[in-house]
Image (cartoon, rainbow, N blue to C red; front, side, top):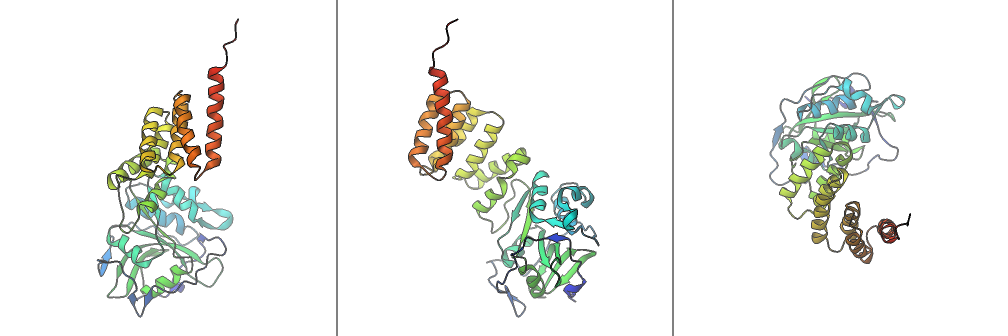
Length: 323
């Protein structure tokens, strides 16, 4: 039997003002609307750990469940310093995503479609969801969706103190829609969830460059196998090579991206930066001239790079002082 939403614990998630959704429900008369082609009638992610929480720590508990399932050994207690804001008595969405990245995982925010969420469960991914669970301004709650059954009109969540909280699909969708249908999964580098576009996947990978470069490298390399013409993945690998001062490798990656994206100035700008860092200001000048001619999408950046190259050129051509 589905439990009423009033049994859920509120106040452990923090949502920015102005995000309440008035979008129509995606369930009608117990039937999922716009179900993805081939979606199984039911699916369950087994062996998802459960961390009970009866206070304000639904964020750390939900993230710990998703990370532990993906192979990261952690606990809510270990995550609290990273994701819990005492003054707000809850966890911000941004902080949950950041902690997942620091753990070497790719947090992918899903399209706001219930069918896509169910497709992740069918593919073996538990889904962290944000719900509105009461009438109060702060009755927000994170939970982990681990099962759905279209025929039985039921979803199952790891939620608060309930290991297997069951709601009807409409109950769940109402609670989920209130916060803009926000949900994410945690993927290992090299995992490609269903119904996730190349753009969405790489957008999720990019922030790893600064916090988990090895994971970012593995994810970009796998993306190139999945999408061999992905100039964004090539740019990412170039950025990582540049960060470790492998300017030759960075130049190769940026040049490859430029060949695939000849109307975009960014690859040529980055190529110019790599060549300049390698000490070849002449080749860098040629690359930045192309970026300046293209002029988009970041002309101010290209002008800044051109100024750096001009300084290097002036220093190289200036006469050596005579003792």
